[in-house]
Image 1: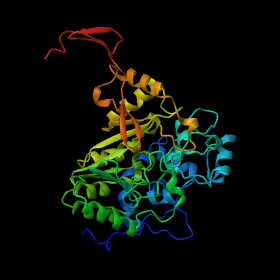
Image 2: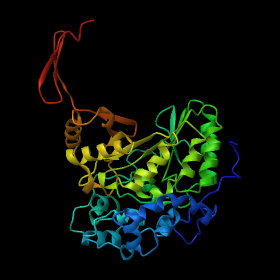
Image 3: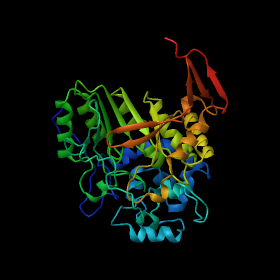
Image 4: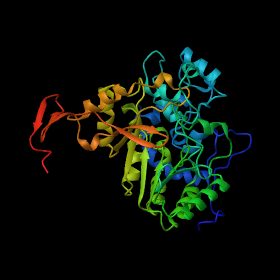
Length: 414
């Protein structure tokens, strides 16, 4: 199966549509939608994102639970937004289309504060803003992924693992995305030639044990396309684990059905890392999407990005981490924001990140504390508050989590 592409079904993208308007598969709209009825019960709660979103966009709850409909109805222009826009958001839509496309699912739009004067971490992540035009430090490819790609869309920084960027479509185009550069290209989403070349590279390199399937969002494809991709990767003897990077539980939970989870389960060990940034994103719908994965034996981790106005206070971060644990998501990484172009207004100093990390210890179980990371072109660098004050002979002088001084006697004795 390694070299066979005949069964790799890809999203059906008419040439007239750009990549924010995908039809996302041709495996039978009505048949596939039947599996999404598991989310329909949320519509009975008028406060749910499902009920509010259906009313906001003037469709039935049944239609609102159809993930393909969300991809066709992404908010891509100011005129399509059902929420009032601030002047800087209006300007963002008008000015930034040629720099980085906007695209926001109706579901994620329904999580926004409707009053633009009210601070909203959802809006900051998804709506374009005129501040993106001013960023003297921002870079197009801050991690130098292109030079680290032995073949197209396969990024290899470490000898034993690769990021396989099979996808281009996303439910939401996050304004801080470090792969904005891929927005300039067309035809990257589950492209047969690119997938074939990547599979051949992985199969020819026995040092590769770990394949991260990413993009874009690799769950934005038909079930059959995902199934066949997994079958081909699992057929490579030296690939031990397969991981997915997806934000669908956060931005389009209706995509994460029990049917999709049952497909992933066939290829264990399979892991999923998702990307919640704030507690406001953790809805009952999102919890259901996560449960579908975890109940099928798929561990779910979380990679957040530290963002100004979104999660850059000890209180906001602690609330996020506690709520992640409640839905069985393990906090994995907290990324310091990348120096990607157009994100100066979202970046925070690393000293603030270290302060937040220090505040967590002693206030939440270690299970809920992510590793704070500065991502560099040569790999991830963990950042930790320094609790070692000095060495005194064989003793170590420490600052404990409450700020008190502690002498650990004889710790340096052989």
